[in-house]
Image 1 (spheres, rainbow, N blue to C red):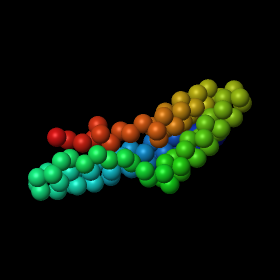
Image 2: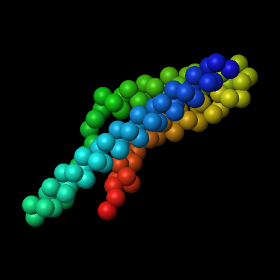
Image 3: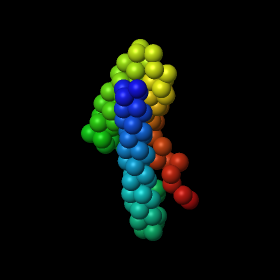
Length: 104
């Protein structure tokens, strides 16, 4: 059961990391967009390129996925939760959620 719990903890930690990165990015975007609009400019288009944090999250996801698979192979059903959360984390790494955090 320890592999399954470790997988779940790693996946939740990674999800929190990705949400925090996207939240910080959305706050910075709102700050810069308000400066551009105050000066009469156009709202800037942005590409998020923080690959160091994303590569850390990918590593956490793959490690959590491996632990979840190992737990599932030992016949522990809690490993399925770790696998699902790790796959969700892997999807969130490549799916930008910061536009949904911007309040108009």
